[in-house]
Image (cartoon, rainbow, N blue to C red; front, side, top):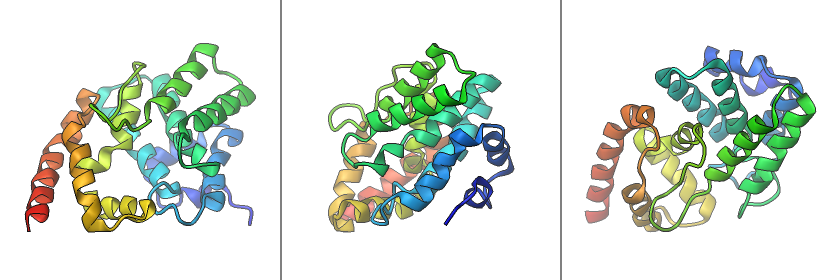
Amino acid sequence: MDIKLNQVIEGCDDRLRLELQALPESMTSILATLKTELHPSLDYHNVGHTLDVLDQVICLADLAQLSERERELLVVAAMYHDAGFLHQKALNEPIGAELAAKAMSTAGGYTKSEIKTVKHMILDTTLLMDDCAQISNTDLSPYLLDADLSNLGRQCFWEQTEAVASEAGIAFSDFLPISLGLMQRHSWQSDAGDQLYEQQKQRNITDLKLKLNQ
């Protein structure tokens, strides 16, 4: 079935719709591809997650008063940050980075530096198993990383945690200690992320500890 962008983003925030509609169709078509071609076993890393990250990255960009061009690069990176899941779960970030670079080159209008920045942003979303959860290597990476893990500091935390556990094939009760470990080594990369999400993150940690002690 041929799905158009407007069908994928139906019901999304108006700001997000405008941001996406301003981009070339050759770039935004990735969203329809994610909707139709991602494996159905991906309960978390589906097109819904990508749209959520897009929405959150715009919120962060607004709060940080980023420029129009910076917002655009963030939107592109957010669109493609999990596109590598179309091919494989492990080490999917380099694939997503290359897909984004190819789309930007095909669309034209982007400098080599901007394409490199988007690639690095996507690579920075790699979740680290030791020490800190993620590391930013560009000036814009903090906003994408905070949007990507924003569920840690939002009320949708429990729903999203269940989805991650299901996708990983781990029982929810067994996944809770893993989730707590991630939250304890995670910190927001941007001031905007800290402002938007930290209070709810601490509430989620408190609730998670209570559930683990039951």
